[in-house]
Amino acid sequence: MTPEKPARPSDDELAALSREGRWRVISTVAASGAGHIGGPLSAMDLLISLYFGELRIDPAQPQHPDRDRFILSKGHNAIGLYSVLAMRGFFPLDELATFDRGDSRLQGHPDMKLTPGVDASSGSLGQGLSAGAGMALAARRLGKTFHTWVMLGDGELEEGMVWESVISAPRYGLDNLTAIVDLNGLQQFGWPRQEHDRFDRSEPMGHTDLEAVFTGFGWRPIRIDGHDFGAIRRAFDEATGARGSDGRPSVILADTAKGRGVSFAEGAYRWHNGVATDAQLAVAHAELGFPDPQPEPPKESIR
Amino acid sequence: MRSQRQVWGDTLVELVRGDDRVVVIDGDLATSTMASRVAEQHPDAFIQAGIAEQSMVGMAFGMSTLGYRPWLSSFGVFLTHRALDQVRMLVAQTGAPVRIAASYAGLLNGSSGKTHQDIEDLAIMRAMPGMTVVAPADEFEAAAAIRWADTFAGPVYLRLARDAVAPVFDSDYRFELGAVRTVREGADLALVSTGVQTSRTLAAAELLEAHGISARVVHAPTIKPLDPAGLLAAAGGAPLVISVEEHTVIGGLGSLVAELFADHGVTTPLFRIGLADEWSESAPNDFLLHKHGLSPRRVCEQVLARLRQ
Ligand SMILES: Cc1ncc(C[n+]2csc(CCOP(=O)(O)OP(=O)(O)O)c2C)c(N)n1
Image (cartoon, rainbow over all chains, first blue to last red; front, side, top):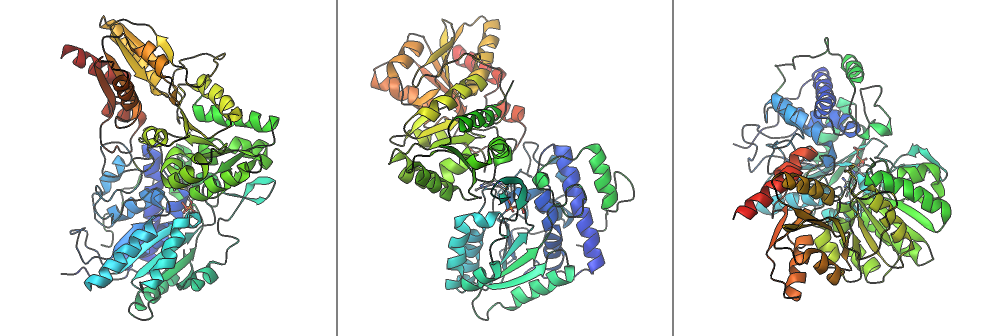
């Protein structure tokens, strides 16, 4: 049986799941001693919305041939994806503790050969959209109705290869393909705002009219607040609703904040990656609204 | 003990201070590669190309045609693999004075895993006509090689490691292109090594000493152009030669020694230690070195096993 779309949780439920996901990101990275923070936190509301309210997937059959596909093109955000996959039941929550430790299914960057629920390996930026276009093209030719989703970073858009697939996807009428760009406005080191100012980071795509650019290349741009669950839901509906209509792939341009939800990381480019101290963990913990320092993760997640 | 990336950042600051033709082109990894030190202290010499390695190489080439002396700075893997065609067409074929600082080269890159491990760079870069390939052993050789590369007229690929290793040389080290260095004397066998692996190979030789085996350690910082006579003199004559490299055993230092021996009719048995034909994973350095047989203890064990055969 083709996996079905999950019953959509309420915004409050999604918000609680997102807070749990954020805590898992920051605490897992702290425990493993290395990893990315900023991007996984900015993307969390989008990932939670996808995995708990949109994707037709079955954790019991991660390789189901008719499942929706999801590619995390910005593969350095792996711990964000792993947290959500574990919460969704693809593997035990305890396994997050093995992240990046050696002999682990949870590699520093996603590995489709190892982790249940990972549809494409990534980590070298810029490759995911072409892989998604290939999946969407194959689905079209095989008469399959699943949808392919690809999440990219705004820094990642600087890779030329992204634009190679932006150009080719509309030519094949891939309206079964949706790109989500996590527009958090920061990359790793980034651009000077002024020529002589290297510390006032400016947005990777701040100078680009992305809606115009994607429109010009034959895409359907949908601009939203990437932390507004209602807006995310409507964007997903618009993107998937267009399937079979005009052949235009959709791109959801989601404005987000890097490090979202944790005060010391939010908007700070130095928290692209980083390991929280115990004191910072306590702050994160309190801000994410958990009652005590080391919470038992909610057992009753919506699955 | 400083890491080679720290040395690179600091040395580049001095180079750009002394010569305004020297520029660093970053691929959004300056905080990792330490090009950020140039950005902080000499912003005019720092150019952000974005996460766009192919374009970075083109920019470096373009600037070099107007007299600039650009350094490319990124993780090695993105320069030697993503931008390989650009390096080949625009840099190697033209002989442009572009310096490729391959940061986080080899296996150990802060546990990012196989997407970020550059275990084929020596094979790829040495196969390219006109490319000079240098893999310094420690902070002192790195500093000397960086200064040397800055004055060299053609393209240079410099293999630099992320983390510090125990020094092999000292602060008055002088880099000389092609020179092979015997860094430890020994009569029973010769261990040939390159890059920061030489530091671990030296430690392995100490362990072998405890087993009554006297191992010579030969360091080959220049992979290309090779000094055949130098390498033959240093390694030849030993009853057994063992290459040790933080690189796949296919096409790297071990292959180079095998080619050299074949070319010169040397029949000394050669045993290659390095990554077998396999991908690695993300894990702490110690774990990976142990797993792939590159830690001093594992090198020692493999040598002993070989000697027992
Ligand atoms: C080809 C390639 N070049 C460089 C890197 C190193 N790198 C990892 S993350 C990153 C910044 C990414 O920024 P963005 O896409 O905006 O991601 P986010 O802020 O959402 O985490 C860079 C340069 C890489 N992984 N791949």
